[in-house]
Image (tube, rainbow, N blue to C red; front, side, top):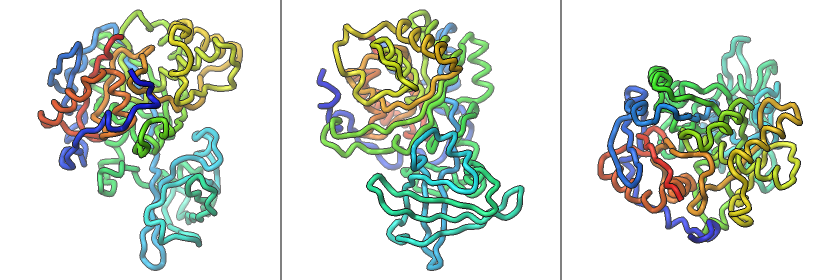
Length: 410
């Protein structure tokens, strides 16, 4: 197995016809198809079958992040439409705190039709419970790290989260090639979303309904929530010849102590089924946080680098319970009720899953880091899975169908 630094994007390329990309959600949430892969066998099912497909003692991990209306539209006096897509706070720090800023906020943004907006403020008027609010956007000088925009609003009593909720639009992925509709306000959120901070949905979770979650509980499947705020980097294509030239995006995570304890107690004792690549990267990052602590580090918060799992000798790695036990002691020493921090973890062929036994996930773009993660789970069978999904008429990407992939054991 080559080192992931040496992997080429061509290793996870396939032909995805444009008409296979789902442009709208299914009529009924939860009516999606489900491709099941286990022990080399592919089976076609529906997502509603999930309770009967998971062992009754399983732990189901889900990302409870909530998508914010991060896409703002402005019009210049000339009529030109400028799109401002808020990506992350310009000066770093927790996104939760940035959303609570009042009166003014500075963000790194992706700009649509940027050549028409060199300088000068843009403005729009929106309604709020406090009356009309005037929102202004000012493009700041380029500092070499992507466009920065300063927002201010009058009157300034609203938080930036409230401004986006009323003035912004659902940030649909660029491959949908349409403006957000009324249905997207509900359907581009999971039914268990609660922690605001994502600019893209954790799409594997979109298939769940309250009734299905109840059915899973009745079947004995325990549910646990983690938070990873999905950044726009999740859509970032790999332009480098090899992964060594690709910088993984860093995303904010939060995990409560009771969930860390639950993962500690479940590891090796029962199947851990992970909903989405974001949940998988979160719980695997907890392991590497614990491994770093056991090596003598004393971090202020969780911080996992892109190549961390691939450095050093494999036989030096601690066991899962040992690593998560270290995380729990680290929390107790600091009086913490949750782990916070960020991860840039790259999961690619050559990576061995520490906690995840199965992954529920949608079908991903060719040549993406998300598809590298799938290949890490199922090996070269990823191509057979995707060939089957294409020939059997599955819908792809964010509003598409799902798969249940059991991780190949080393």
